[in-house]
Length: 290
Image (cartoon, rainbow, N blue to C red; front, top):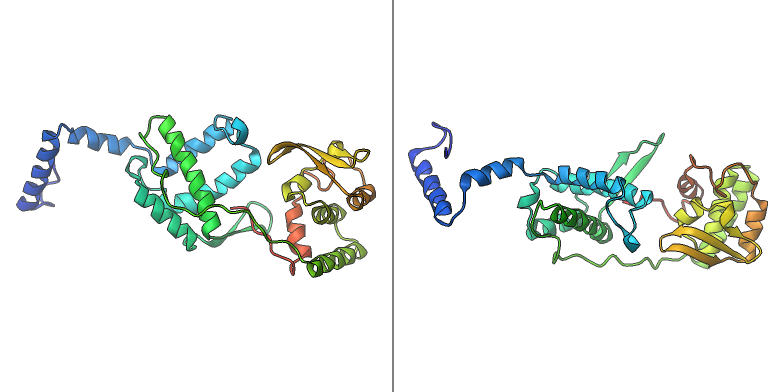
């Protein structure tokens, strides 16, 4: 095997490399084979693409040992394209070690990948943020991707295991009574202005039910059980779920115009989240879940 190109290495440099190579041979290693293997090794970027392709075919299991949902895959793609690939994409999978993972977590935490990017939606943008929570969730995804690599025989172990990261804590922020009053005034003013009814109904239901944004966005008329005073969600974050709902929420539903769409609060092509950010900027700002 050649050690290096003639003319670019001095005699002394070539001699040192030869000694190192000889040492590898004595230990039973095959430097030529190892070099060839490295050339053929997957990069992190290529591995991520293979992982997403497998997930789209339902081959990657999520919670409850079921294929990942479309909404989860959407978030995964965002974290891959906006955090993992920019920081680790060019690295070889086989060369990644735990110190690289620790450095990746620190870089995401301090906002090294933070930026504002344009999305496919008209005039749409995504605010990519750092922070401990983003770093923890993205490291969790990276761990899943590398577990996929282990299962495919690409690497023998997962370097994310044992890496230090903060717990992805639950949110404790709640609106105060004054903030609820301000939100109510904003919603009433919007109705008076004749603004988008489906989005406004959705915000009312978010405030009155405590449901998640995605649960209200995807709520179907067939899941509304007025007689029993509940929503019978066929598919929530925890799977099928029954949610007791109060009279005020059903008053909002009673005012909603029933369209051909199966969804109650928004048509499939509408993004109610934009209405939330537009109508209640003083309450909080919308950030894409990445």
